Image 1 (cartoon, rainbow, N blue to C red):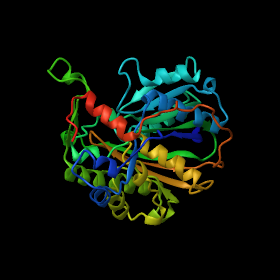
Image 2: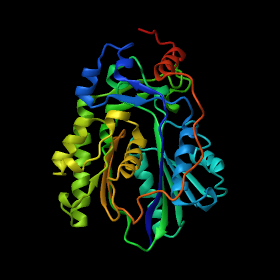
Image 3: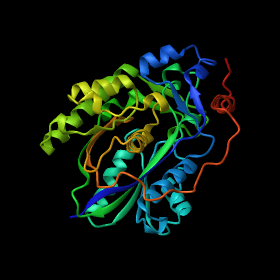
Length: 359
């Protein structure tokens, strides 16, 4: 049975940066208040669609692997904030990449969507259904945020990243995973105004309010990710010290630190970039992986641990062995279009479109 090695990776981060000080111009908050509670200093706000960001990230991942769209047999697109529900996002990406005829599906498990998608694509390669796959984790959250709710407005950002999987006989790729969900707790993180439940019910789709019970989310996140990490380490016969790098979901610095303590993971081996991007939901883990590679934090043969949690409340942990190559084979010319608005201007545009009174 073949393994599914990661042979390509690429990210796309919109250039417009929204700082904590920017948010303080329309919310009663401050840089100190946000950073001390979340670890976040800034986040990105997109001037383009989700599909645009995913196209750039995917093109870079393919170039990194030395492949073209026609070489891909499967696209799995992990996200919560789709441009369209029907047709799916993966089919649009297939068309833009020239991956004619390949299988294409979306996966929505909120912030764990990329890792659940990684499990899905790996299983299809292992079972012989396909021999190559593109796995995307991308979110365009800013248009859906309730920018008047301080509990959520400070947390999230936009971004995308992708990896290429290829069948291999080498002992690399996804080794073990633990997938789970606390379905009974799904109401503690709910976005009202997204989905069929709100159609023709007196609400405008996308004009959202967030049910976000922070303390309960924190408890479930730490428990779920901590137990999932312990589970995969036990089944792999590894100790926490055997992990070369932890690449966790970047939701909140306090959550990351608490998971590391619970699972006895060495803090100096935990990769953190939440301060730069905030919570990009499905994009956080693959973006962090790309940046860890760029910074030389991932070495050939490294053992990586990737835990995450998301709405649902889903949770998971993935144990990955890296291959021999840590540098791209090529570069993609695909870029985002230019923009002439600041992040704050884009956000104020979202607020105005929803009829929100500016403070």
